[in-house]
Length: 601
Image (tube, rainbow, N blue to C red; front, top):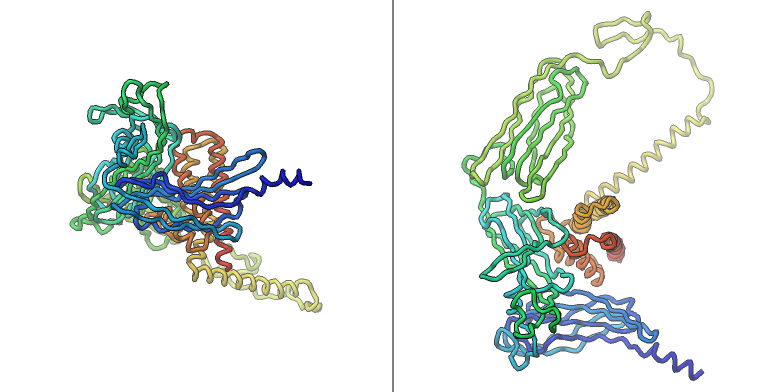
């Protein structure tokens, strides 16, 4: 018995601990550092509600980023959850980072406060630096991200193309991770096509040779005037630094001695901010038919036939082709003469997203003539503003003259045989005057199946109709509930389409669809306009809805994975595709459960 107890002692010797650590406690002014909060123990199921301390004395650059570590030593399992933040110092002095707290199985755990000393200078004091330690300033000269735009002064609705490029003279040791995606407040955004893997070329900058790879490309269409700012794109890049044997220099070139001593450093690369000056469209010369189209377009209109009979369908097709924001383009209105019945048009679009957004948008109008005679459909008019020529243009189609003849009647009434009716013109006939086929039915209908069916079925249908009407009234009065239901439908539809693309091995379309599934779900769920959507705003809405903090962090991480997988090295593997699809499905299901539980409280 004593022997058994001795064997069991290690299983219970692992206590739950919650600690805070920093990579350095003495840091230079305006320098970055990392703080981590780690919960360790044997079994960490049931962790929730992480509450970090205030970082008011510092600038929070990113976080929390979550990591999990599980180990088995002598048959005993141990695990740890870590939540990390990247902070930057703002001023010189001694500051205290307060306690962080977390719940585990109903018990609250807290960390100890940490004192941080911020000293003058762009880096740590030289006596504090370890042998071979490299400052961020040295790395920044040899690895950086640039946000490049094709123009900084545009008209409202004119396309701005932004490209994020990684410049490096260093060896990237492993897969990069996204800290923060850029935000395009005040822009309608279209992601441009790019390779899933980063392809490097070489460029000379200030006499130094750099490898250059494109990270991300986007087409931006400003939706408001004034000076609009594009926030930086932030990445964590693991760098392998090798010391040259003969010279104490990490940066001679990126073909250093492969057998020399090396170390891996995680560097937080941040792109530059970009400011775009958006001018309003000129008021002079604006046509009455102008409806906000900006770009360079052509108009084409045609009808399938000009001669038809009454009650016979006709189709008029209108298409706009060219360069510009086709997603927001409004097709011209169709004015029909009296005597026509018009239905809602069927629209379609074909958009090219390689460089400049271009393509075609088409509307097909189904119309049915009801009156005989000659009719004319006036010319269709479409106006747009060309930002390159700084001028409005108006396009007009030709008018359509239609010849409508008498067709067959929709309903032919037969009241009696030809011997019993007198035809009075085309539309009026005498009603039959004899009644030899009418007789009195003696059987009582009270106990017949027809009587009870005819009496009960309308009542049941009425109750169903009332219930349906109340449900629609409730949805109409509760816009949030309406968006909730729509969000589920849209997410389910996009996931279904993404699964089909995954089975077809169509990776580019799959990554786009899987990103839209999550972002579109969050936009509809919380009624966030597409132009104002950011993952941080969605996280705030999730907190208001009572969603657990750990699930919110999973949502943010999943969003970053969805965006990053488009250009991440190795993302083209089938296992990665299946993993991102399964991950997104689980996240949406968990969100639905959490929001439902929060609404039920």
